Amino acid sequence: MHDVEEQIEQWRASLAGSELLRGEDAAELESHLREEMGHLRTSGLSDNEAFFVARSRLGDTEALEEEFAKVNAPRRLRNRLCWMIAGVLAYWVAVHFAGAASGIALAIAQATGGSPYVLGLIASGVRIVGFCAMALVIVWFCGRYFQPGSPSRIQITTRVRIAFLAALLMETVGFALTRALGVVCVARTMPVTDFGQIARVESYVDLVWRLAGPVLLGVLLVVIHLAGRRPSPQPGGSL
Amino acid sequence: MVVRIVAVTKDLVAASATPLILSILSEGDSYGYAIIQRVRELSGGQMQWTDGMLYPVLHRLEKQKLIESYLSTAETGRQRKYYRVKKSGTRALAEHRSQWMLVHSTLQQLWEKRPCTT
Image (tube, rainbow over all chains, first blue to last red; front, top):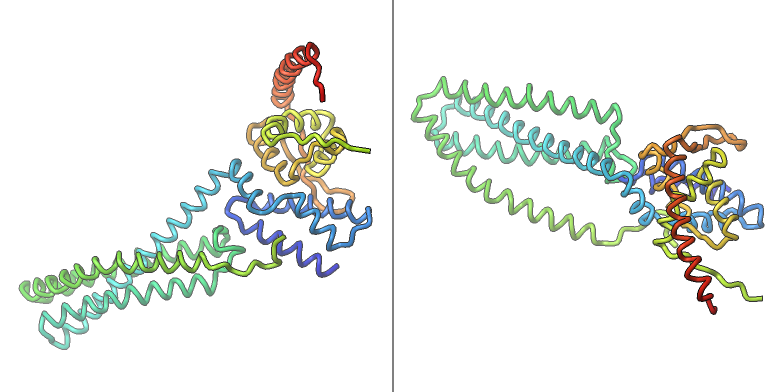
């Protein structure tokens, strides 16, 4: 009995994780499954047999998703918009964190009195390393604290709302402000020619970074694509 | 004994789903599993829906405000989602009914003239 409960739980989780089915849809289907199983048991089937027959009568998950998609299409769009917003926000956090770190590094390096050329390289280097580090932190953080039922659906829980708000605040008040003020501070305390020299070095590095960025992104997409094509083990197996 | 199975095509199943559901609900409030059972029973087990396909149809009808749903506790103690037909649903059913009757009577006349030989 326990074994069947586990199978039902897995089956339900696979439905609940779909971006096309609402939680209540999965609950309704589960209720149907259980009723069908009860019916089948009275005609002499074992728990496991009843589960398999009832599940196949309901239709496989993919076919169900396809049908539900016809009704829940706006929901899919909303879900994807949520992911896009999350992505944009994560990008901003990383960019402005890198900018803030670069500004602080520049202010510190300026106090030690390096040449504008070196200062420019330091500012750019810290910016790139900061961006990559923050991106990794975000990925780690999301993997550590948010494990939704599946990779596809954003479940808008209080926790997710707080995370969104915190990221937005951190991004605007924390990093964006520090970055802007950092640039102003450095610009005010430094001879204009030195500042110009730093800006020039930074824009050269920026050029390389801007060319390398899309290439890196492309490589990342290919890696994700290839990883997605590898057949992943299905929990519970499929018939 | 040879039992001839009449397989209803997918298109016909899809087309008849709405009038079937509305008709069953107009007999009284019902829920997914019972609706499927009723279709099975009425068609002598020959109209086979993939059970899960019923729910998107129900939800679409609910969205179109032809039916409404409410939760109620079943005898088993579990919550069950019941569906009830609304006034607009009854009107829609009348419309479906006249269309189906028209198709039916048209075919009937043709087939009476030249009976099916199988």
